[in-house]
Image (cartoon, rainbow, N blue to C red; front, side, top):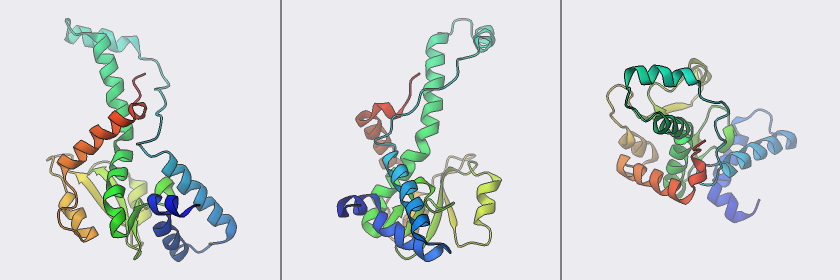
Length: 202
């Protein structure tokens, strides 16, 4: 990997941490790590092309909605629903990329492609974090993986109250007000404008 890519992707930060915490750091495992990392980085939201939804809408959904909203434009609602699902599918990827761009100058990096199991973000000092978009987006398996490890968790927004926790993440990184919800929103809009293919409309 060339130096520029190594620095931009955060590989120069993540690989030494992988070597430090893994039991098996053989050339074969190192190659697997690199493949996962590069695949994840190459599929980040700003460059990915999202796959169209692989199923067709159930026509009975239209029957049910039109019974409740007789004047609704069902075609517009159908497109909107698919866009919403696609946006939900990539929101976590956009979140990780936004955080990565902000923390990289401070010796933190996204651990692309699940290259370190159950770790989304790490520092050059070995701090390990799982990043969640919402407080209710964690399943039991991901919380179980953290048990007995030094991996901590941060989530962006409380699903019940709408409160965001950017300041908490700024404290973790060690830079006051490094993030904001407003800036994240602008990042999301700019990313989709640059790469509309990240959001599938079909």
